[in-house]
Amino acid sequence: MSDTPSSGPANAFVSAELYTLVQQFYARQMGLLDDGRPDDWAETFTEDAVFQEASRLNEPLRGRDAIRESSRARKKRLDGDKIDFRHWLGMLDVLPQDDGSLRTRAYALAMRVPRGGALDIFASVVCHDRLVQVDGTWQVRHRDLHHDGSVRD
Amino acid sequence: MSDTPSSGPANAFVSAELYTLVQQFYARQMGLLDDGRPDDWAETFTEDAVFQEASRLNEPLRGRDAIRESSRARKKRLDGDKIDFRHWLGMLDVLPQDDGSLRTRAYALAMRVPRGGALDIFASVVCHDRLVQVDGTWQVRHRDLHHDGSVRD
Amino acid sequence: MSDTPSSGPANAFVSAELYTLVQQFYARQMGLLDDGRPDDWAETFTEDAVFQEASRLNEPLRGRDAIRESSRARKKRLDGDKIDFRHWLGMLDVLPQDDGSLRTRAYALAMRVPRGGALDIFASVVCHDRLVQVDGTWQVRHRDLHHDGSVRD
Image 1 (tube, rainbow over the protein chains, first blue to last red):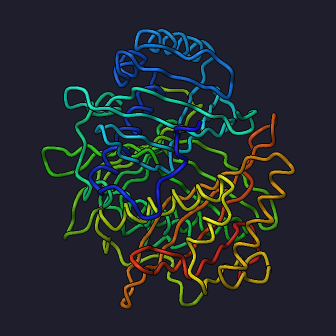
Image 2: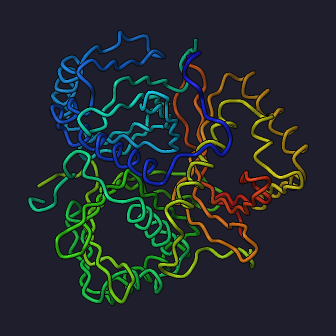
């Protein structure tokens, strides 16, 4: 994690326009996943995106096609199990980079509710993203999820 | 839910002013409910507002008076049971409509703490609102709550 | 709590710039605590800051040095117990004061995950802050935490 700053210098904050753009991006992006739209979800990543959960020792997903396949399989499982899933992001920090990309850090909560069952908020995750603009649209080029409670490097 | 879009097109985002206005509206509105101020809460809805929880098969509340009565009864119950209640909204999406109104979608968590007891985050809900301006003040004209884990239409 | 308004008048909202500045301040400030950086955390409070949790009957922490010592001790405990800790703030209301300071109110969730263990979201708290600018940097001069479920004054 040596090149992923946990936060920027005090009071070096981004503009309201940029901050709320990223807030809206995440609300909509995670909504696509939670609404069971894996193909639209995949479109929010760059063609060459890397999606990793280093703290779980999974192999990273490499490329939009791999991300699409993974989220299609995920949707199939959840539909089969009749589970509603929600991803909340919050506590967002946005760090503009010299190349025009954005590094972001956010807290995330993952939760599920089986049909007729009880809410289970089961994971607290720290999400580090690299966002880039492609044809006027923000996309995730790199996502790194660290699950709280996991062994850290 | 056929006419309630789950989200807008990618990157069609609203201005920072509008987005933070709606964020502040919800923080304050839900604060009124959580602070036990049912009459002030009712004033955040239009006279003809409809408040429905279709996923729970309840009859909708129709009109501000019905919303006020319902929230007064709710406060009485919670005060009697000595329960602190919190409603969190997040993951907000704002979709301006041609008539000047706003459609919003947000995730909500409902939680309670009995006096001396443990926190219970018991419901994950998706909130779809129609907001309108009345005399320069934003109000809810229509609220539709869908509880995760319920049978969907 | 007589001089701590629970919320402002309807629709008296602050600008997007101010609202997102405070959002970013809290994301970064709480991140410092959660990342185990007690000295940087202490710098986000004024020299004469007061940090109180009236609802828990603790004595207030008075002054940045006391806040630093307390958070250093806290870090030592959490490191020893191998616990990841997260503080979420949300549902933010910002009330500018005539003297240029800000009163804020936010909901907070406190959660922890022991190494290899399950997520425990154990406290819902209402945070009332007084923020002031010192040398162009926002700092907390007064923080008052009220734990839901505690006996109220």
